[in-house]
Image (cartoon, rainbow, N blue to C red; front, side, top):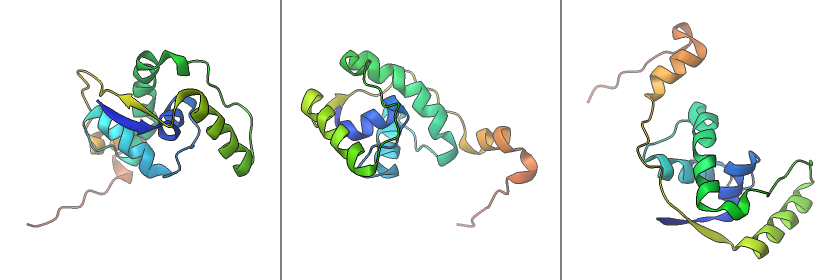
Length: 123
């Protein structure tokens, strides 16, 4: 179990980028939960897989919605309100039994083999 900022957690559960560390916060929580290095093209799928587990661990977040478009200042004020309600950090457990997908194979499936150019690095 590891503590994560509510901003990163709510980024996953609301689908809105709220992390003060921007994408670094998203990569960190999703990689921790899956035990894999998540590639950019995998983020939406992995977030969809992690969201139910986060809400299972913290059902108090189930009703937290962010459907309106807010200015950056209003968004930070909203986030601070949520941190007052739920705390600035919450403990997160990794997914159990997560089986990742090969990132290159997933990319090929997503965009087609003609758009993926593998690079082989000599050691």
